[in-house]
Amino acid sequence: NMAEDEISAQVSNSEYYLTVERGLGVEGTPPSGKTSHQKNETLLYSYSLQGDYTNLVVRLDGTTVAASGSITMNRDHLLEASAQPPADRYLLTVTTGEGVTGTPGPGATLHPAGTQVPYDYSLLPGYSQLDVRFDGNSVSPGGTISMDKNHTLDATAQKIRFIIDPQQ
Picture (cartoon, rainbow, N blue to C red):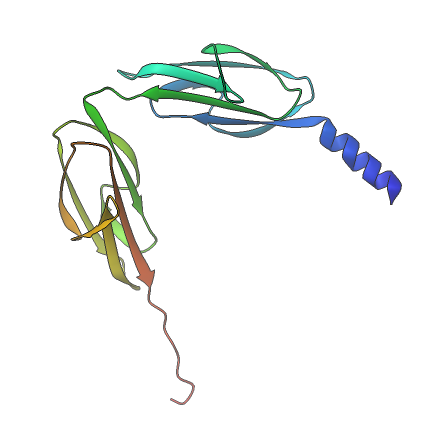
């Protein structure tokens, strides 16, 4: 239907999306996420550094802009705010899959250089094949990480599939 196509085209052209990516060590508004806005709506943004993070960089559509200002929503925009962690700290990024319990839990945390971070993971009932990886390499389910650089720790498991034999 021609009239419906024209209406949907008009609606889609009157709304634009702002995607915000706010990194660790950055506080302010708007927070990370994707929001829709009316055409030509003006949005204010403002970011600052948290704690002892340094080097705040704010980019609008890839171009460096001031730490605070306004955006006119005349098209879709990407707003990114990032910071550098303190030089003597390293990031531990942890992911845990379904069926895995233990510490540390999922997320990203900063640790001072040289910190010993204990980890310990186990399976929940109904899961098997615990796979713990440190920087992509298979390791035991429990141990200690020495924070000498940024590291990743991933723990995954497989759900046990029960097969019912109709012959029984």
